[in-house]
Image 1: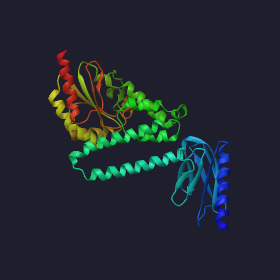
Image 2: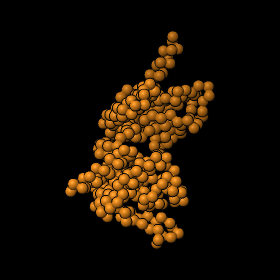
Image 3: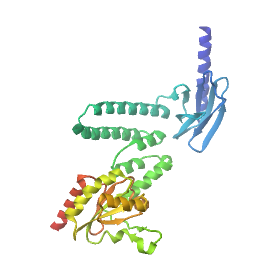
Length: 356
């Protein structure tokens, strides 16, 4: 009994010491090892801070600078344990690989709660969808995605100045570019400098410049580097010349791209003429593979090959197929068309033009 009291008193002293150190802007991290104890462990915060600490009698105690904007890691051999250097006392369980904070509202505790919510959500989602008929699954998926995004948008609103906000941003799955731009803009100045956030901001700014209602942005492609003069084309050679043009960004290796070709072919056959045309633009693909695949899938309309990243960077295209409709004057009418929406968009645009 006396021995237990001594151990508890020693533990209390360690915690007090950590709290005292934390008031000076540091995080105290402690952990204990079993019989197989390494000689040292390494702590890192982002890419700009790291330190190696000796393991003494199977124990480690380290003091880290506070940085709530990045994940920190304790590296045991090659195995990382993540936490946030949030100014609390962090205890790492080397058997489970989990970090526990003495601050229930600290950033490390928030990440733990978020991970637990996510796991519970996905477990319930998988259990429910397995019992549903295929006809009911689509509606349930839409409902689940809305709930999932709603939770993460709420988490983001409460963590605009720490790494939890970044984790929330990376988890949101939405096509609402305006809402995502608003969410990114709500982040603190420091978080907005994060490379991932900078990349997203650039992406959504690019999308805004090429959103429906804006004029297309021209680009030039050399389709055959060995014959640059004969093979160089511009996007403006095909769009903005008095016709509605359905533009399909695709690649030979892309299964979903090939799956849309029959629909596009049907629309082309039905509406081609003086008011409508189709243009396929091969991106991220080898020209020889593009040509071979185009014959196989039956592309009989205009094509630009070997565009690579040129148009996808200009238009903020993250994945393919990406199908857009451009009006006779070069105004982008719609983006992200798939399936039945392709013909719907074309027929509505042509019908609206006839009324004018």
